[in-house]
Length: 140
Image 1 (cartoon, rainbow, N blue to C red):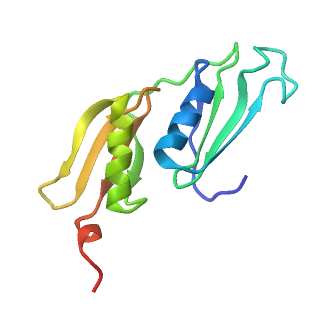
Image 2: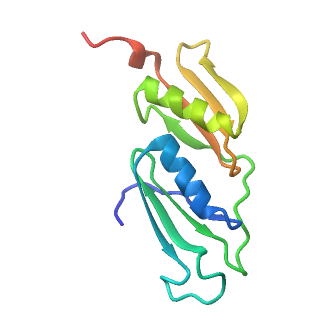
């Protein structure tokens, strides 16, 4: 593991494997999963996710919450993907997350010319997705 910025680590209520697979469909990248059995844990089902990672254009960690862990819920928290990819990719990510999630604020051009919107995915994660107007201008 390496990195210079914070990476979200979500403890999910038994849905980590499904969430990581879904996020891989949306964002691309590679998923690595270690089960409770792989990690030598006996405090949950052997197939539960002890540690999972999506490593790609979007990087995050997820695991199935253990018996003493509170599963992820969020209010007032957005994972920002502002300018992290080309506008076409960001638009696609927004649409893909909305397919089985909920649009909180449609992806749209703002009065200052930049684009953003937010969508809550099927796992309760709210994503703020957007790009600057200049990203739409051809180089030259």
